[in-house]
Amino acid sequence: MARIAIGGFQHETNTFAPARADYAAFEAGGGWPGVQAGEAIFSAVEGANIPAAGAIEALRARGHRLVPTVWAAASPSGPVTAHAFERIAGGIAERLTAAGPLDGVYLDLHGAMVTDRYDDGEAELLRRVRHAVGPGVPVVASLDLHANVSRSMLAFADGLVAYRTYPHVDMAETGARAARLLDALLAEGRRPAHAYATLDYLVPIPSQCTLAEPARRLYAELAALEARTGVTLSFTPGFPMADVPDCGMAVFGIGREVAAVERAVERLRAVVSDAESEFALELYAPREAVRRALARGAPGAPVVLADTQDNPGAGGNGDTTGLLRALVAARTDGALLGLFVDPAAARAAHAAGAGARIRLALGGRSGVAGDAPYESGFTVERLGDGRFVCTGPMFRGFRMDLGPMALLACAEAPGVRVAVCSRKCQAADREMFRHLGVEPAAARILALKSSVHFRADFAPIAADVLVVKAPGPALADPAEFAWTRLRPGLRLRPMGPAYAPG
Image (cartoon, rainbow, N blue to C red; front, top):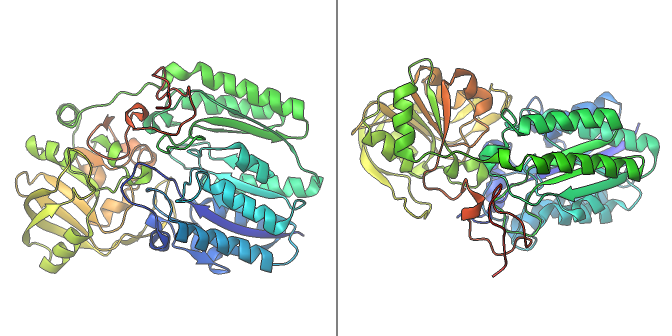
């Protein structure tokens, strides 16, 4: 039986996003549990599709004794404040030092965290963890599929393993894989061989979906290559919204022999490189998307419009109004939009009560070019406290607390209803709407503030999915960002222009 420390620090940083992640953002959690310390970690993540939950279960099954430190997550946004990073990372390091002799460490990380002080938040955290436990203690971390993996991260960790699905239905399973790897490293008693390679192009977030080509094929090849070689492999398409030198795709692996690991990683890198042209993305302007959806959608078989550029899961605030305006302009009947983040509107709806008619300036406060509040009358149809448990494949077992919620019908187009919440969370689970007494499958059009995660729970009921390019800070085309710090020569989209400093 080994004595293993458990901790986690999850943040996906869009350096172009309007809001930073302060400590309060981690206390709120953004749909994830708030900051947890010590024994509270176990109950907070239990039963949820969270990497730490999978790791804890797998390590306990092997009879290991677990030492909890600190676990924290916040909704994607701009950089993590220095105060929040020091408080959380410092808490993990301090508890590791106080724990005394440890046999191993498991960390639940994202891999694309940027802070006010550090371009590579995970590398700095791993450096502190390594300093706390010493060079001989195995440190293994699970990572998000959207991680921007650096050589420094690999230098401070003995093993890194990433999700293989987007939507991330395998988060808990990835935590369990990381735990099994840590268990194997403990048994072998020596540091494994590593290999790492990057790719020369950025891939838009919506194009990374593993339910579609080419990502579906690439992950199948990864699994087959892993089975043939015995090398533990990961492929991270990256988070193409972080203006740092390590932004982008990477492949990496660990195993017993350097040559075998290097061959497997190079083979996977070549396969991903050859797929570049297949990652091209088709986007629709809001009015064109609504027109197509009206022609195809029907109650029981809705068309999903993905409002990808205002996705709270990629740094958006969930409050831009471009797609809402297009739905209203078309006098759409049977449209359901969510989740729209506006705590003031939710409070006003609760104060007025169900059935009331109120006037609001809804959303539009993120400072996004081309966006503004939508001023109109609304009928308050339903109210909710924002507390419910998710049931879909992605957020299964997540205990949501989204603050006061309301279902509003637009006066100008009563067939357009908006699900409003008070705390940021992307629309990726049907329970988010059922909480307000509305069944998503009954809609004609579902306008979801999400990029890909919604597909896990909504694709089974969708007649079609269209990715919409409405105003928002999470640009679907990476080439449109005002980059200043990428590595020279990196293509800004598949088959697109290369980044040149200055």
